[in-house]
Structures are given as structure tokens and as C-alpha cells.
Length: 414
Ligand code: SF4
Image (cartoon, rainbow, N blue to C red; front, side, top):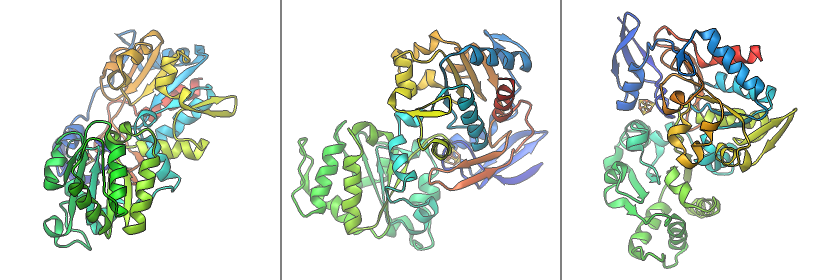
């Protein structure tokens, strides 16, 4: 029996203090992780599955079929990779170049806009360790990390004692939640939960800016001005504040202009940072790697050495307009996350799914290649949600190939 510290790839926090017990190459105990991480770590030791047209085949047959699909495609799409290592992502980018593919990940319909401002240094950000050590005002806006990133509050943002916050949450930190519903995180925020109507964020931001500027904050939905002024005063007094931005806020805004304006006004009066609540463990890595290669975070199309970029190259618009004729989906489940009206077009083209888990996408794919779970059965590197690089080793020996090994084989065969 062995006990070591490991990295959990269950979400973009990439907690690096996970202790596991394993016996006969099977993880049987997981300590420190949250419930998501625990289930994730125990998923290891899967048996390899390769399928073509829902029939079991060997690895070579599945790879051959995937290669044939990609070779015959005139307009292939490669999608996913947020839950892949950076090494796998870089091979996928090379593959996309080689076969003139459209390449996208789910940041194109989620937090890509905010992540872009962070990668381009257009908004002030910090690390999670800074938050633990220094943060006095923490805002969760349109996000419920208690459910999505369960250890964010306990490990970094609210409950822990930090170097400069020894008296902890009881005396030295204020948690604020802005949301359309009373989430678990909103309950923890107590009196500082600001419940707004759906699509009410833009007006709420304007009202907070008015409050910060000494004006009477007003909204068309009559949010109590007294509460808004109270919020503005807390924010003004922040010595080290952070706003964790979730999809709930982004989906509500027409553009990021109001959020940028809020950050500008806030930082004239206080010290406020922004962090994107990216979900998949290496979404940030995918955006960074593609940005380094092309200058864009997502929604690109390679065409004989030229990179095209625009919303028309996102998975949503490509499927809507039927501009792709085959899809390679890596470590993602678009059949579960996209609306039926869009995903039905994915059913009309051949799909190759590479994923450690059986998903709706794997079940609807012409070719399914089941791979090792990164961080459990395969090692690599990834970028945490605060852009800190993390590397990890496999915890147990894999009975199935890594997605990196499969992509390399596909690449070589094409
Ligand atoms: S918070 Fe995320 S990274 Fe940490 S243990 Fe839970 S799932 Fe894993």
C-alpha cells in the first residue's frame, strides 16, 4: 500500500494535496479531495474499450477508422480538449493544422471573453495563493463554486487562514454572492447575498458604479439603493478584493464593456482582481496554448497555413450552419452540453470520440476510443484557473492508452 500526495484533475483548481491509498493498482482510499475529486480519482483502472459502429474492435481498427473519417473529411472539426493535458492539446493543434480543421473548445460559448482579457493582461488578476494569503473581499458573481469547484472556499478563498489573514473568515474576510438564485455559495455569504433577476447583471453593475461614484444607485427592478450603497462601500474598502466570474454573469451581459468599466472604477478606489471560474481542469491551458500558436483562444480554422478566426468557427455556429462534415471530439461531451437543436446536426456527420468516460457523445459516435484518465492513469501538465502551471504523474498504471498516445498515432497515420 502506498500513500503520496497527488494532483486532482476533477476541476480547474487542480488541488495538489490529494492523498490516496492504492492496493493492487487500484485506488481504494482518497483523502483531502472533495466529493467530485474523490469520485474522479476512484474512476481509475478502467479497461480499454474501442468501438466502431457500436461493435467492439481492437485499438488498430478503431484508429484506422478514425484516420479514414478524418482523411475523407473536407471540413473536419476538432472540439474539446479542456480536460486534456497541455501535451495532448499541442498535438491536437498540430493535427488541426495538418488536416485544415476547425478547432474550438467550450470557452467559445462560456468564459472565453473573460479569459481573453486575462491572457492579454487587460484586466487585473492574481493567483489563488494570493487570494488565500491576502483577500479581504471575495465576490462570487454568477457562479456557485460550492458545487462546481468545491474546495475553492475551503482551500483558497474564504475559510483558510492566510499569511496576511491569520484571523480568518470570521473577522477578516467578507464573502459576497451576486446571483439569480440562492445557491450554496450564496447561503454562505449570508447577508451579503445580492439576488438579482435573470439578465439583471448589467443594470446591477451600473448601479454599483453609481454607488461607487457617490450617486444614488437605481435599477429598473427597484433593487434597494441602501443595499447597493452598502455593497459599494464594502468594495471601496477592499485592500485585496477578487471577483470570481461565472457563466451566470457572462450569459447575462451583452458585452464585457460594463464589467471592464466596473473594474476600472473599482481600481480607482480599491484593489480588485478578477478570476474566471473555468470548469475543466485544463481549459485555461487550451486557451493559452492556442493563443500562443495562433493569437486566438478558440473558434479558429486552419486553411493551408492560414489561421481564420471568428464566431462562425465556433462549434455552435459551425454545426448550425453545417459547415463541418466530420468531428473529432476529445475529452468532451457536446451531446450533453449543447442544445438539442444544435447537436442534432452532429448526429448527421461521422464523429470520433476520444474520452476516458462513456458519455452521450461516445454512445453517438461512429468511433469511440476509451483512454486513460489524466492525473490518475496518465501524467502531464496543465494550467490552473489562475494560470499557474501544474504537472502531475499517474497514480496507478493504466490499462488503456492515453489520449496523447492515441492522437499521436492518428497524426502519424494521416
Ligand atoms: S476542488 Fe476540484 S481539484 Fe480540488 S479535489 Fe475537488 S474536484 Fe479535485
